[in-house]
Each structure stands twice: as structure tokens, then as C-alpha cells.
Image (cartoon, rainbow, N blue to C red):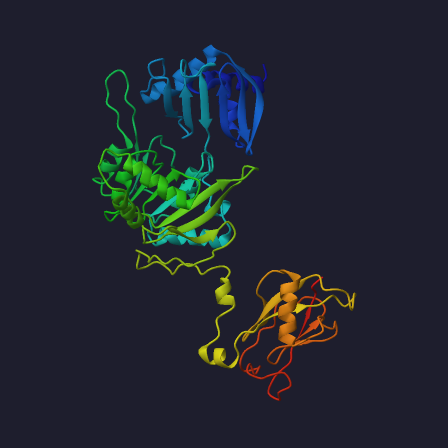
Length: 474
């Protein structure tokens, strides 16, 4: 045997003794994110967001042996008395096992493989949104990451925690230890299920209470799935600023409702308004992550939790998957933090400011409609009209999409004082020192100010200015 054959035999023997046997080559492939064993038969994998059938076939005995090698080092049992087991591999990959009689067609094994290298936040969001997420960590805001199964909540949580300041004591609490946080002072806690041999279960609620006595600077809850959400909320309301958590949800607004529902599931008689007030005070920002059809995971929304728990809409959008749209209202809890990043694109109200009282008295915006055929068809019937508004700073700006031809044409005729039922194709439409001539639509109305335009002048006045805009309404 040559050296390659010997290495192959040695690798297979090692995998059979201490690994997952025939599945080791699949877990060594960096493109594979999930390995699925659906009972005796072929093994499936998820690669780049798509399910693929592999050439590996396992029988029932091979699957049972693999399950025993995975759960035994962790002190767990997987048999008919404990048919559902959650475990993890030495590299942090999550293993979920379901055995008969719960699994009808044979033992089921699902392995969620995590990347060996922690992805940066830039892999989930563009630079403006990345800066906003980094600011939430620096400002010590409490952040909840929401999303569906496989959307990348844990991976994003790892990426966000990569920006935690060095030297802080961070306590992580998880059902199955998946987080791999950088830093020299990270304490990891993991739940333990009850076994038939007698050891009592250690739940997430127990670990949250224990973490409060461990002098944490920040608490990171891997995933809140049940009544431990109440303890998590209480921990965030006791001065542990800058903590993070994750949960399953369809969106930022839905994440708050899920956390409330899980908190109410605790054996505590609390009214819903009290829980909502606790949630509004505990959580500052919700980051919702989604996975596209191609398997790419991205930040879909960053929402700020409003202070009013009785409001119908309790979140305010700060960023979407492309840009930052609003500035956070919640103050930073870190006096040394930098100011939050400004919106990438100012809202419409900022781009079109309201006129000052003086401008409003001298030049009220006049709503009108430009209705004209294109120059290539002079004299043709009007088919599309565009209502516009005369703004004292930006000139003529559209107010509504093209609408009903008769109503808009009547507005145009009233503005011009026409009586013949048509607007001549070569006649400009004047309004307060401006004119709009037929032609092609402008890309953007020219900027104007009170210094270069007499907003109070009428057409024909000496002090007025006439700016021609060419419009295409075809």
C-alpha cells in the first residue's frame, strides 16, 4: 500500500473509533452546513442552501453506533426511555437525535455544522448597517437577534459578540454550547437534561439565576425557548447592560410577542401589561436575520423598541437590508461611546423641508397638474397627467402618481384658466414665477433658494424668475 492508501485507512479507523464514522468526510467539507440521516439509507447534506443526496448509505446498526459514540462522552443516554437527545461534537457542531418509537422509520440524526472561522458582521449586512450594529455593542444596548431555524441567529450572534470589549466578563447560557466568543474572560454554561439514572435536570432558568451571581459584565443567552425568557428579562432589567440573546421569530415585532408569551409560560402569575413593561425596559434593539433562497444569510431589519408598551406598533425601523433609515432614539449607556451613525439616506421630509412661515405667507405651494402629450405627438389627446406641487425651495415636485385623466386635466385647466377643454401642446404652464414646458421629464427638480428666486413673484413680474422644466407624460 502506498502512503495515500495508508492515510485513508488510518483516517477511517480514527473516525470509527472516536468520530462519527462515515460522516467524518462530510463534516470536514467547509461547504456543508447540515448533515441529515433519515434512518437507514442515503445520507443528505445541505450545501450552499440546497439539499443534496450523497453517495453514503448507513444501516441501522451503523447509526446506533454513531449515536452512542456522540452522546456517551457527554453523560447522556439515547434509548427507548430517552428517545430525543440534544448533544454536540467536540468542534461545537450541534447534534439532534430522535430514536424509535418516536421516529417511525428508524433513528434520525441531524448535525448542524458551524463554520470553523467566525464570520464578520460584514458578511450579513452592508457597511452602514454594520456600523450601526457595532455601535449598539459599544453603546451597551440590550440586543435580541431573531430569525427562523437555520437563518443564522447563532452565527450572527457570534459575529456581534466579536466586537465586545476585551477584559469584560461575559457569561454565555445555552441549551447546547454553540457560541465561540473571543476574549480572555468568557464563562460558558450549558443545560443538562434529566436522565432515568437520577441526576436532576439543569434548565436555562437555573443557569440564568446562577449567572446573576457570577459577577457578569454581560450575559449572552444562546436561545430563549421557554419560561427562561422571564428570567432573561429580569436579568436585563437589573443593570446588566449590553447583554444579548436570540429567539425564533418571524420579525422584530413578532419577536417581542414571542418573548412575552414565553415569559407568561413561567409559573408566575403576572399580568400581560406588567410583562410588556418589563420587555420594553429590558430590550433596546431587535435584529432580524433571514436566509434567502440561495442560502445567503442577511440582516433583514434592525428595529428599535419603543418606550410605550401600549402602542399598537412597538418597534421603529432603524435599518433594512441595504441602509440605515433612522437614528436611534434610545440613549447610549456608555458615556465614552461615539455617536450613532447617521441615516444613509435622509427621509423624504428631510429632503423636502416644509416652508418657513414667511415663505408660506408669500408663496404657498400651488397644486397643479402638468398634462401634455410628448413633442413627438403634438396635438394628440392627453393620456397621462402628473399632478405636481410648487415647492418654495425645490420647485415643481410630483405629489401623486399619474391618476385619473379627467380629474387631473380639470385641475390643470382650472390652474391655467383655460375654457376650451384642451391645453395647447406648446403652451407653458406658469405658476408663481416658474414655467414648465412640454418635453422630457427632469431627473431631479433644480434646487432653489430664496436668494436666487423671488418666490412671491407672479408670472411676468420683474422680480420673478422663470425656470423651464421639460416633462414627458407619455
